[in-house]
Image (cartoon, rainbow, N blue to C red; front, side, top):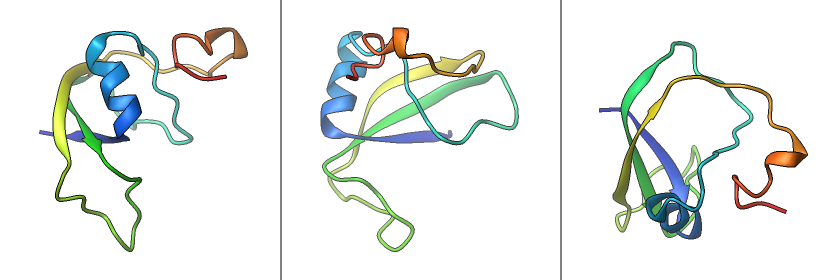
Length: 80
C-alpha cells in the first residue's frame, strides 16, 4: 500500500472531510492511485529523518486526477 505523509493538523482535517484538496509540488507518474493511506505525523518528514514513530493512518483515499491548483481552491485545501 502506498502512503502520503501529512502533518497532524492536515490529517485531522482530511479524516473529517473538511480538507478535500491536497497541494504538492510534485505529481504522480501514474493514475489512478487507489487505496492511498493518508498517514498523519507529528512533524514533517525529511530525507534525513524519514520516520515518525507516532505516525498513523487517518484515512484511505483514491487519487483519480491531478490539476494545477488555483487560489479559488484555498478553502478546499484548508489554506489561506
